[in-house]
Image (cartoon, rainbow, N blue to C red; front, top):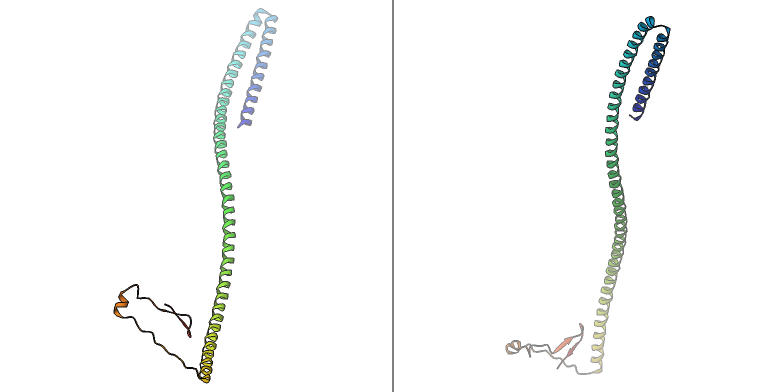
Length: 207
């Protein structure tokens, strides 16, 4: 659009120069005709004057046409410049939006990395928890085996001890704990156990 405007301006200037040159030539011819003689010069002068007027009218017509074209091109150029300004503003807004989106994307990427690290740690902790549960299960099974063996050994020891006491001829004393009566069960102060069972083979009597 700017190139078209410059081209039209150049054409208008060039045409105006050509017309001015023609008018100058005709004026010169008119002066020559005047100097040649009054009678002959009057007809030549009139003819030259008409030519000058025709050329001037043509020049004015072309000038108006060129001015109209230049005015049209100027308006188009102004419209293009206004549109370019709007597009520049819109481009600046879009650039700002893109920058904001890139910034938000960076923040989201950092959050995703943190979540990924947390997920990895959670998986590791889950694996460790599973290992600890397995170890606890194994320890519980081992404890049950040891506890069972301990009870068996304790029973055997108690049996051997009783046999040894029988061989020694010692008198064995047996006792049976009396259950609570109705009155004792209704009295909180008396409704208490007088013994503590320490294991399967022993108990402790309290006062």
